[in-house]
Amino acid sequence: MSSSLIRVIRNIRRVGLKDYFRQLNAIGDTKYGRLVGVDRYGNKFFENTTEDEIHMRTRWVQYKEWYYDVSQIEPGWHGWLGYLVDTPPNQLSPEQKTVRKYPTPEVVPNGTGTRNAYVPYSTVKPKVSMWSPTVKERTA
Image 1 (cartoon, rainbow, N blue to C red):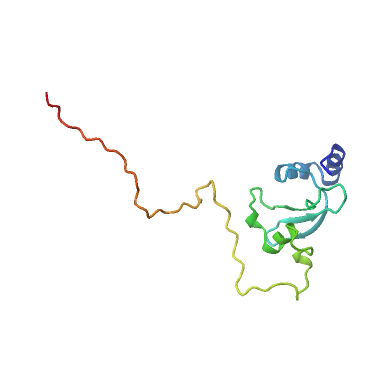
Image 2: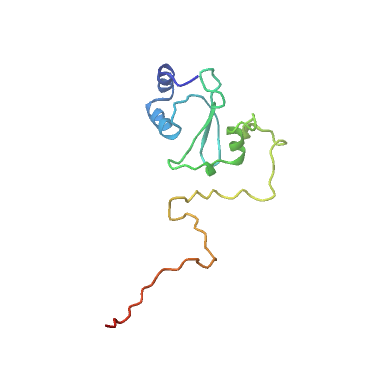
């Protein structure tokens, strides 16, 4: 189903005006659901299984930070959001959890459009050089 006025009003009453505007700014829609879990970065994960939600849009994340990036989500939660697994990472038994041989690196935010943007260094000699005019004496 698409977003209807009745659904929007119902969600405003359920989540409140503050969260309504936050959701509109972050995901462009108003949603209401149960809190499934919180990851180590403070992001909250929700799920709604009612029939008025669009298929495959029943899971979403509410980022802790205002300026968010998808790299701020842990891999297990990312798989749950993308419907790769049905069980959220916080409900897995210890036998089902994978143990890494190395620690998970800290999140490095995407620097595109900022001073931290990746700029490759070119080792190729320029094919075109700038023209530098030379002044000659006029002969009459």
